[in-house]
Length: 449
Image (cartoon, helix red, strand yellow):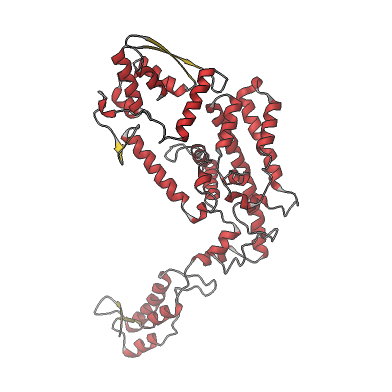
């Protein structure tokens, strides 16, 4: 908006030199000057994130016949007028409805025939992009309002989360991608369950089957409730806070990924000092810290990526692209490390289940509904087989001991109805053998009143 204001007040047929610290704005103007938008206006404008501003700048340059050159300057480097522009932008952000605002009359644009609006707000995106953003935000808000999420991610905390990087870590590749593998699928499943508190911890198992799992306390330390965070903070084996080791490994991962990009340009001592300051409180394992606005290490373990971490590595790497790349790669490796710790915990948990005489058959029975065996027995009593059999043979068949052949009395599991059909077929064949071949034909199964 500041660049458009600058060229809007310029005289006709003049040369304008603009110094800006925004590379995105410079790229948009360079596209306009190189006539890249003129080659395929329909597709490029519809996919542009700043559709209105782009068309306004294009129309002003064309009507005023301006010759524009742009120079990129470093942000926050002490340049007098750049610092002054930053101060003015901050004032405008703090009091947006008190200061006079510069607005664009979108109806005066020559090239735009349809102006997208939503609730009387002119959209600076195409309808396609605006619909995607709106739908994404709706589903994000539905997810945030779940009881298992909103106790630790509330409105103020959500503002401190870099959601783009967070979802990229959860989904390393697009869900519609044709290339996949077991390792990536396992990592994605673990990340989603960890973020949504759906891992089969003792806390969740107790909720699902309280008769089989009679407590939700950690079976190893027997002090705290075993949830998706406690499995990484439990110190029952060594007596040492495991977050200290996790913190050191995470710092080494961050340094290694930064060194892979910067190589000889990396100032190792400066990077270590900044990480020491940033991770100073990462060894605190009180889960009540997750209820505050600031993002702690436990939130990072659960899957959130704070804006502060992305900004830190943007400053270290010199640009946001490399900074985001370092954070993404580091979080991928941290997830793999947590996944290995989870698998080790599962092995110990299986040993504990065997010590409690909890078998796989018991877990399956816990998911099945109880069988009403008495009703099944009563229904089988009324079932008879008739096919020209004399009355005495009918009574003999009727008075046979009735068993529920749908039930396996050895294991207690329900079997299919094929066993019952075989049972009655045997009695029918026995009656046929005694009385000879039927004259009337086919036998019938039916219920009697």
